[in-house]
Image: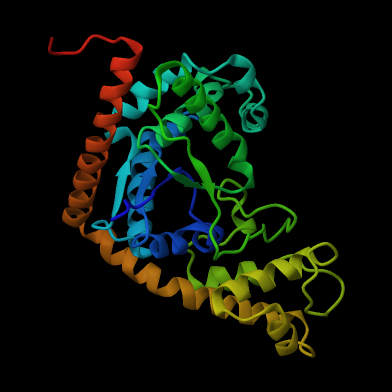
Length: 333
């Protein structure tokens, strides 16, 4: 029987997970768990390149874990864990730093963006962040990495570093490929519909998975559209309306043509209310399950412990090979 291909995905715990995260990633993750061997890491080490409130970061990590579980990820079928609970991420990152060139890292667009946003804290971690990301992926001999357009550069670096290491020491790492889900829509900002919805932007630009129905409805009613009143899918000329149509299509399964026909003579008010109804309906069961899971600390602890142990077992196998290849002395002679 052919072994399942392995998928790795890491998500930062900071900020509120959004409707975009749900439509583009989380709901697809549960569709992958029978076909692939999946690891989902809450990458808390990545989060500290920016100064965090320690108590808030710990809460955010647990909140993200509970949302993962509430969205349908089965901790028996998937490995779900905190990055910092598996020390080999940091160890492999240091080793891969020694196989990554300064020029490669200086070309990373996210480093340039974050340096502008956090000009008072341009630290070495911010610069070498993509190497830790490469370590996250290569540590588990990952075949496929779900990525968006903004992560292509980082995956390419991971591939280059893996290939460079393999050329020196033989086939140590699987060279990962990008995974582009068949199902999913690119959800854009409610206030700047030419930009992707992001949890690091102001709150009125995104719908958080845990937003209550009143807030969801208010945000969607304020969503940018245009001066016309026609519901028509035209991303170039009507990006705001097209974004709302994409959301409705993703959640209802209706085609753009059917949505356009449904709202042919209604104007934007009724259309926005229909989008709000679909979003509220989709998020309500997740929010209910989230409340139950968050209150069950024993269950969360069990998931955390099991996930860390299972991730560690894979990571140890990779690191034994890496340590031997680069010439580090074994603990037992």
